[in-house]
View 1 (cartoon, one colour):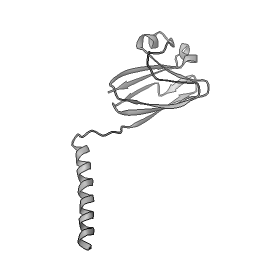
View 2 (cartoon, rainbow, N blue to C red):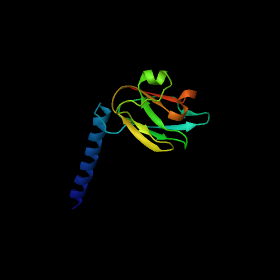
View 3 (cartoon, rainbow, N blue to C red):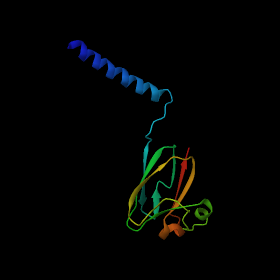
View 4 (cartoon, rainbow, N blue to C red):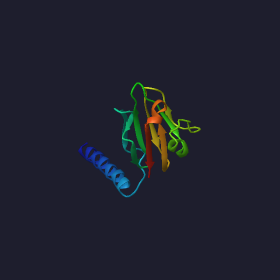
Length: 125
């Protein structure tokens, strides 16, 4: 019976080391880092710019008078609120999250406050 327990313990240790070695040697993991974006005084997102890695998730917590609309760069630069086709959005005062699996730059605005500069830029490496 004692040999059986020793074998079980050794198997668990070997499997644990193997899994850790896989990740450490460049194996892909299914989870990334989580980041937070909130709304701040002065009609701003906090932070206003964020750089993350592919596979990371951003949690959004919006104040009651703020929403989140994904736009394209031209709309963002013009301080307009036209949504990007198929883009991510949240209604006024909502919470939500988005996992970013594609590298690139993502542009977001607050519909009611875009004219006063409430914008968010997320860069995914």
